[in-house]
Image (tube, rainbow, N blue to C red; front, side):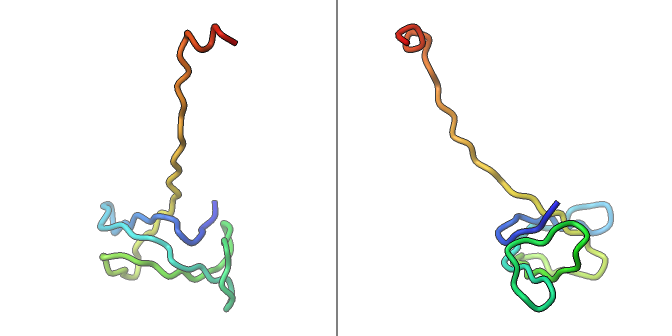
Length: 79
């Protein structure tokens, strides 16, 4: 996986989820990065109403919206 700015986050503490947030910036070394891949050390800035604590687990994900179109059977026969 990878982490990118704009990704959504779920914040887990122990066995339960305690909040959600958004990744606002990702850094690799001291440079701002567009993405950081699995296994790389990085720093992230998070916007969230929940205050992060040591030991919290962050689960990052991206939401995608797809537009679907409907083709009517009568239109299909015309082709």
